[in-house]
Image (cartoon, rainbow, N blue to C red; front, side):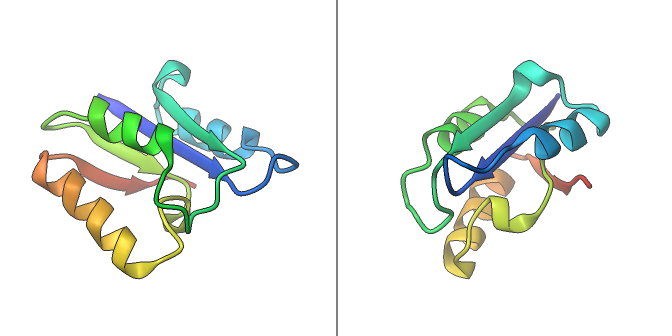
Amino acid sequence: MKIGYARCSTVRQDTSVQIALLQKAGVDRDRVYIDHGVSGRQAKRPDLENAIDASRDGDEFGVTKLDRLSRLARDLCDTVGRLAARGVALSRNR
């Protein structure tokens, strides 16, 4: 199964382009998790957690850019490690 994650940092920003790119890559709209108005530097990103929790062995986890997962290298490595531990492949869809 393909799971997508989109994030924008401010409430004025729009995730529609990210969502469209994820859908173009084959992610069903109901499998796209969105954190709206949440900075990538924040540790608490509720829909990122929901997306990771929904991921299972053999799934593909899509983002449009790696900075959607995190703005900090250490946090990005932790997130990628969590996905890998579940047997989930990370893909960048643009």
